[in-house]
Amino acid sequence: MSKERILIRKAEEKDLEDLYRIEIECFREEAFPLFYMRKFIRDPEFITLVAISSDKIVGFIVSSIEMFRGILVGHIYSIDVKPEYRRRGIGSRLLTSAEKILKKMGAKTCYLEAYVNNTTAIKFYLKHNYEFLEFLKDYYDTGKNGIRLIKKLEP
Image 1 (cartoon, rainbow, N blue to C red):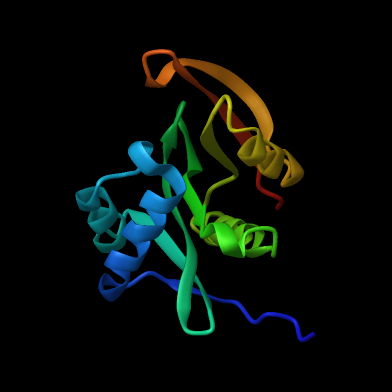
Image 2: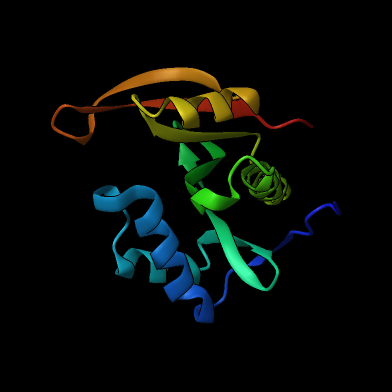
């Protein structure tokens, strides 16, 4: 069996519907609305990358560079991989690609948030050297707590 070839590239306007479908499939009622997805692609403040396998978008990542507690940092907003393409290293490739871009833009650290009950996501981030920073009470909604994780980007 040959190794699956995955292409990572910057998201384009034509990708919007595919990205939105994947977002809904992955996050259902917690999904970002369509107008946010459009902003993630159009706004130069955001770095939105897609993963392509066999000419189909199978995942994406949204990140930005911003000030957090007085320092320039990377912020991962979302990583989505279609369920049937998970556990193939696609999320890892997307995360690593975004971190490299954020580092080139001057970020020394990167942070993200995860729903406290999303143990799969938390394990994924811990595997990628993210560490617990803080508990976020009612972050996603009343009774839906989050955690913030942070990673020092290697020099």
